[in-house]
Every structure is written in structure tokens, then in C-alpha cells.
Image (tube, rainbow, N blue to C red; front, side, top):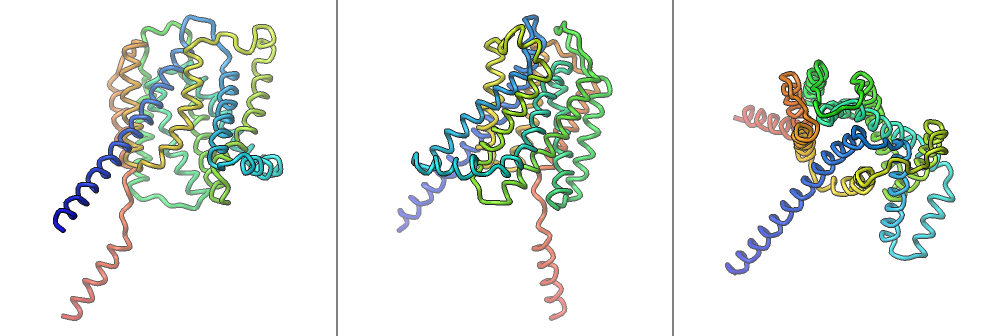
Length: 347
């Protein structure tokens, strides 16, 4: 019996170690994806080669996400008949649902285009820090749209994050190796729009997901179908004349395709593995991505780190950690206090 206990204990420890390793793997994936996307996109927007049309990159990303979601749904349903029935019922036979998902599609399209505009005018590290404003924006949308509440510590961390971003933007760090013309004010305005879009679209999509038991991948297909239409309209309105003259894939290089790969495959992959991590790990991942982006910016773009940038970045990283801390279970505390009072009265 003792051997059996030891054997079971050994199995438990091994399984626990595997779980920990997988969580660390998920953490590494989220961190590298976030940092690599920002650095690669910044590089493609500031290189001395022919500049590609960012609207076409956003559109291609939506197409790839749609194809991947269709493939995953096909695997999830398990048979060709159920797959066709699911598409027929939830996509072709649900125009109202497609219209409902066109709202986050439009908002995400604006957000993704704003990311290209921001990284054309701001260093990757500055962008990475400032983009964390999506946390208070998402928190506000969550309170207003989902009727959730924030703890006092979360509110403190939100204000701390805003103070950190203010320091970073007070005197933006300059990159000495970037020769293209930049407009930091325009870049910050683009990030402001992007974080507002991110907060609203994320909470809206969560609300749609929780309103029914429809598969996540069906919802993704509905959203990406609308997204392709929205981004194609954006391509035509923004760069239609130049694309007719130069071509849809004008200026594309291996680095541009790498950015599209990270935005599509990396984004979907991160959304899958994120359920295996808690808020603390997500916060640590965001902070680690900021550090990696800063190191890469110094090496690749000659970023000159200022005191205000360093202090602001530190504040942002600390606030992300504090925001992700688990909320204290006040119910059990109150019950414990009540039981203690009863024992005192009994004595």
C-alpha cells in the first residue's frame, strides 16, 4: 500500500510538472508573439524599401484567419456532413448573426489599421507601453456593458497605468537609426483610437459569445467574413487609386509576410492558449513583452532610453501585475468573522 501511495504521489508530481511546463510554454508564446509582432511591424514601416499598403495587409490577415477558423471548425465537428450543416445553419442561414458580428469586425478593422499608423510614427517600445491603455479601456467597457465591478486595487492600478503612460509620452524616447519622417502626436492619436476600439470590440465579442452556446470558431467565421468585406471597403477607399496603379501586393517583402503571419496565426494561437493561463501570467507576459520590445528597439532602431520612459515603463509593468492579482474572497472572510463573534458570544 505504501508503494502504491508513493507511486500515485510520483504520478501526481509528474503531471503537475507537465502542467507547469505547459503554462510556461503558453507564457513564452504570448510574450514572443506580442514583442515580435510589434518589432517586425515597426521595421517594415521604417525600412528604406518601397512602403506597402497597410490596408491590404489587414485584409489578407482577415482572409487567413477565416481560412484557419474554417479548418479548425471542420476538425471540431468531426465529419463533413456536420461541418456543412454547421456552416449552413450558423453562417448562410443566419444573416442577423452576421450583421451582429459586423460591429466588432468594423471596430477591429479600425484598430488594426491604427496599429500600422501608430508604429509608423512611434518606436516599438513606446507603442508597446502606451498600448497597455487597452486595460483601463477594457475595464471601463466591462463595467458599462457587462455590469461587472472592479476592486479598489484594480482602480488604483488603472490610474497608475495612466500615470506611467503619461510619463512615457511626456518626452517620447527617440530612435537614432530611423531616418523616415515621423509624427509622434499622430502616432499617439492612433494608439488612443486603437485602445478604445480594442476595449469595446473585445467586451462586445465576449457578450455575444456568452449570449448563446454557439461555437467560438463559428463566431470567428461570422466575424471574419464581415471583416473581409469591411477591410476590402477600406482598401478601396484609402488606397484604391494607387493599388490600381501599383498592384495589391506592392512593396511586399518576406518581413511583411512575417508580420501578416504573426497577426493571423499568432493571434489565433494566442487566443487558444490564453485559457490555460491566469491573470498574473498574462500580466507578466505583457510586462516581459515590453522589456523585449525595449531591448530590440535599442539594438535595431537605436532607441535612446530617457528617465521618464524608464519610470513610466516601470509604473506600467507594476500596474499590469497589480491589476491581474486575484480578488480577495470577502465572503469567506465575513463568514469567518461571524463565526468568531458567535464563539465569543457563546463563551
